[in-house]
Length: 271
Image (cartoon, rainbow, N blue to C red; front, side, top):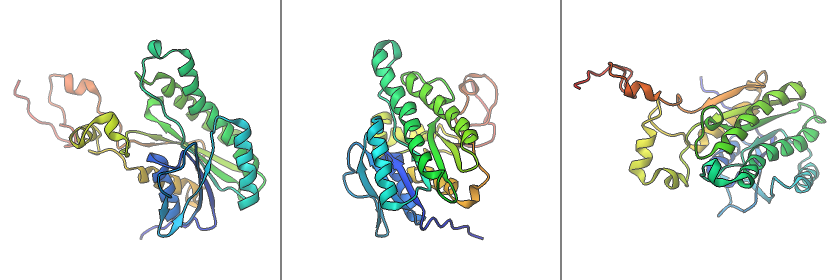
C-alpha cells in the first residue's frame, strides 16, 4: 500500500532554499502540499515551483540577528504559524586551516552553527505558542562525523550542529521536535566544481555503496517525513542520508579477497 504524506495547510521555512539541496527540499515540500517560504541572501534565478505552486522568497542573511527576528515577525503576521523549519543554509570554501586563517574559520563556524541556532530560537518562539508545536530539521553532513581535511571548521560546525539538535530536542520537548539529517554526497548544479565532468561525477558516485550520489529531492523526502505525523515520536535523532556511507579504504589496500564495491561478493585477486 502506498503511503502519501499530505502537508496541506502546513507552513515551512527553508533557509538557503534557492538552489542545490535547499531547492530539492523546497520542491519536495511543495509536492507534499506545504506552503513554503525560502530565504537566502540572493534570489533564485527563477521561482521554485511544482505543479503551479510556488515558494515565496525573502532576502535574508541568517547571520544578522535583527534581520532574522524581523523575518519571523513578518511570517507570524502573514501566515500566523510555522510548522517546519529546515536549517539548510551553510557551506564552506576549501582551505587548509593553517592556510585559511582564523577569521575565515570563524566565519564558517558562524554560518554553519551560530546562525542556525539563531534561526531556531526565533522559530521556537513561534512554534511553542501554537497548537501542535512544530518540527525543526538541521541539515548536517558526514563531514561532522569523520575527518574533514580542507573544510575543518565546517566539519566542526556540523558536529556541533548535530549535538545542538539533540540538546534542543530535550529542552524544547514536547512542543517542538528537533532532528538532524546527516547528508553524504549530493549531486547538485555545482557538483562539477568539486568532481569535474560527468565521468568524474559518476566515478565518485561509484564509491558510494548504493552506487550513486543522492539527489537533492531525496533529502527533501526525508524532511517531508520528519514534518509529518508519521514522525511524531522521532526527536533528537540523526538520520544518515549517505547511501551506505564510505567503503573503508583499508579493504582496498588489504591483500585478501573482499567483496568488490557494489557487488556484495568476493572477487579473486590475480596479484
